[in-house]
Length: 381
Image (cartoon, rainbow, N blue to C red; front, side, top):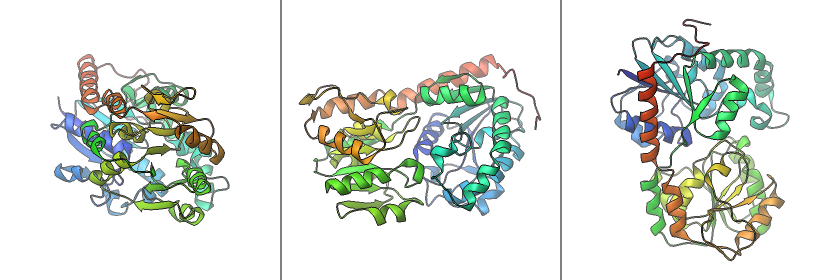
């Protein structure tokens, strides 16, 4: 089976990049493609494999530039020639699924239909600037293109039930679910770290991640919060932060493992379809304080009531993305003791080994059946 693996872009160290790394590990025989790759800002493991890039790689060196050139990136992906492969497996949160020139089976592991297109109000800040308003004016065209691209996919695999529902609602397509993996063996090493008294937040610092209400909450509480990550929203967040907030920036995985293990709890603010951060925290033996919506409800076991000891719980949920709701959750968390070994065992069920086995089984079964999408039209615009 001649296989191509394609990811949107490899410019940061986010969750989808970690999933793609697991795909590469499972299919070492595959040829690897991405629109743009920056070895200085993405996962270091990618340096050990051969990655083919598009001509856009010369001008797209950051995630911010990729977002700004999204329509061009989509067009570039549709122009790339992937004919001659038996199976093309795309890892897509944006444009990887937009491939047009292929004659093999197209299987898309979908992280979520592009938020910028389908849920712009949750992606862009209220009253966005000129670039955001221009992008919104293009939404009807971009949605039609994205929808047509989704009809060319032969089979969708969703990273969560929330993503499966979004694929159905936006693309009118069905999908099976293979939950995105945590690199359990790596992050479980953090469970040997001694606990400190600070809290931890790990996120790209972008508006739609809603880190701001956590910064405000911990500033009000005057409780120590370490923030790992960088992004366009960093200057605003730093300006609003009190003295108890420490911005660490990006760190390598070895440091991240230690940070997870030492934190008293990891704070998770976004309303998103999945999120690997809570599972990475659990793998390191650290509980989570999370907005109890969407994908996190598939991975975390919330503590119900006010027990002193959470024998099997992995997280404290709060209801609303507000400082007040988070402050209440922190105060509830303070009264609960968690079983560190139970947290580690919980994360192990979502490990990479299980993900790789399920993904290979699904890809091989689909390839043997070679069932084509009913709406697929080769060379459709």
